[in-house]
Length: 383
Image (cartoon, rainbow, N blue to C red; front, side):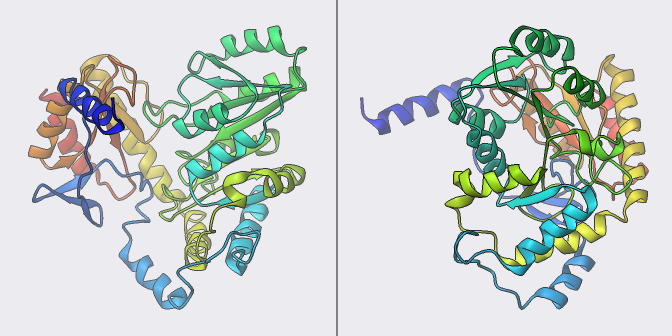
């Protein structure tokens, strides 16, 4: 059977199961999405602080930095390491009091960092629901890999107790805020486990917490005063920061190791100077946005209460609030229902999430008014 035939058979199988996906053209206009000839309130973006939608800031940035190069034309280890790459890392270092290293994307970062730790004497213990980029990095590494039940640190502790003497290092991989349920990891308990098992290395992905949590927007690690206790903090610039790229915070030895051993960093053309300047520019914005963070938190709590009161459950503790559908067909029906009533919330179907946990994912943002949220609540209560 040819490759083309195999592809066609797979497409037909996906279509018959309601799982076939296609690229959709969605134009954005501030906090709105122009989709299917409708102007919809966009609840599918990760622009949590509404920075990406801020046209005033866009004009200000272009006026100040618009003459910078739109390409680096090289990897960072050749001649693609611009002044703005180092400036961004310096700004992060001053904020976190840890060494910083920037990357082209969150996927590029997680795949590269985890796979660089390829020692066969290393065990990786990962939460069941970590992001695909982390899973792919683990699969590329030579380390032994086990998963613990989602947010079940008792299960993690059982594994640590069983295996901590058998490996030189144990890397524990979690997300601070999980992207599909919006629930959070008990980072304080995780840090306590590190004190009990000295060979633990904690890897916390703050992709959905950076910009949103903490008094400076540095994430849940900042909010809980745990930055110095986490070995590797990873975050992206394409969500709350309203920009592009990613970065990690770590020890200097780890940074130097990654520069020399992380293949996606070594063999990728670096982000352009204008992208890195934009990261610096936006970083200055989020530090000052505590009022927006507080508003977003209030929105999140109100929507959580609405869904909980209507359906009796809701796992979210963040700006990501799922509305469970429990099947692909029902998720698509809900998606169309909200489109017809002015909201864009993309359906999350299996196998992106486990079969039977399909849902809509409401992604709230700082510019959303309580008036618009109330309209969304009315639609939910009418289901």
